[in-house]
Amino acid sequence: MFAIVAAGGKQFKVAEGDIIDVQRMDGEVGAQVELGPVLMAGAGEEIQIGAPVLDSAKVTAQILAQAKGPKVITFKGRKRKDSRTKKGSRQMITTVKIVSIK
Image 1: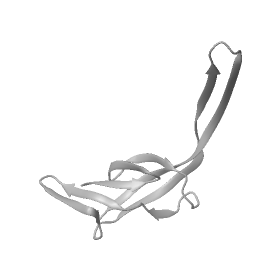
Image 2: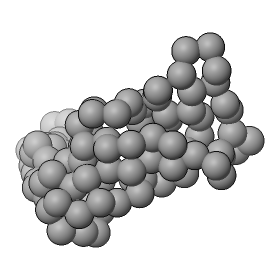
Image 3: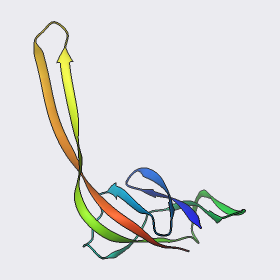
């Protein structure tokens, strides 16, 4: 069985046992959380599509880690002005494991 869920402004196709990185969520490591609205769910030929979401479907996940993501560099350079700006930032992410899809 698989589901498409919206979490942290992005959409993920998940199945039971998958490990994904989502934008920072509240909760302690080991806690069970319910992922955002389920847009689509199905198994094999039986697929349910929400309009826009499925109210009957739930995706439960377990928090594995709270960490920082990879560094993203922003560089702004202006032609012929010898003016440069280089900044780096790291987004906070939460690693979750999909426990069940109902």
